Image 1: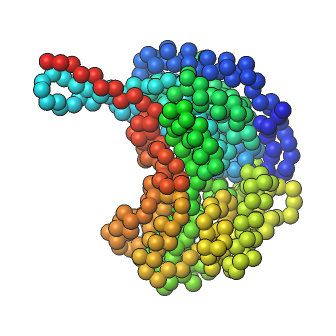
Image 2: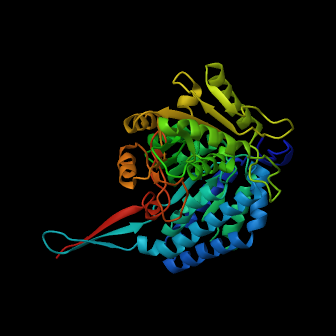
Image 3: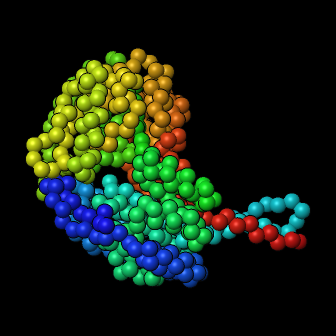
Length: 457
């Protein structure tokens, strides 16, 4: 059985296929990861840092070939793909530099005399389950901090990105990471369940859909394993007021159309004060209408296909459901002619709770705009979502924007800007958007043993 394969979403052509791992291969990977942990955990921090710095260098040295590869596998335009590689490199460099400090002993002040400290220790072999939309970046968020800690990793990547997965594994090998410390596995869902349950596994991190997250959390909970889940998002982009609507709209369009709209933390619901609403919708529609789909391999392309034909079909079903139930379609809403998974950039208004677009995540180039009459209405609408990943608030009054940010049920809020990932900023959400945090110092606080060491007086 073959489920791991490269299908170019711009052409629909199947380019390469890989078989799923056998039971023996999974057992060998589990054993190797567990054995590697025994030595990697005792490797000096400076040596771990050297490996991660070399990983960062190799991403830069191979930037063009890595960028072309994910363009072929999931449709990311070449320029955006190179940007992803840059972020990935910065993450490994960040943990190489800052990781040892994050792991420094914390000396406690204790009553009764004597001494006490908390030491950050690794926990063992971990399983990572990563998605297709950012094939290198998502891995780095998990692998960077955990390898610095001294944990080892089994990595199950998306079935549509097998060559990207192998490229990541090869970089670790070429950077000098010991055998077994990072192993790519083409595992089935049943095999994933077995790995989580195995006593040699100490935790699982998944970035993906809400459905996948629920399944993994159930297995992890049943086996008393720690899990980190980064799931979907339906981020609100709230516009209270602005003295430069054109710039605000430019950021709105760029945020929504980036990666063809396939980012969990991209703005998906634009909640606009009634005084600005008509102009916002007009300007947003005009700007998004200028987005031109093209071949991801062409350096001039800024907008590529969705990751697969199935992804395109699913988004179009959501859009059609909204239109059938009375939504106003200002732009797009159709699949482009041709073999690829291209969907027209789309703008919708007049969305109501009876439509799928109101409650579901639109994972593609579709913007939904709402009109509100007050700040309270904006907050209520933003918080009505079952998701709670991120959001943005735009206002000339920064203090007011901060007050609104405090009222949003999300893990992240940007004020007068759109979501952007940085190695030193924590990433994660609440509600149905997941559990735990990645990046920054918080990325090293998930799969870690905060060990108390008490010395009596």
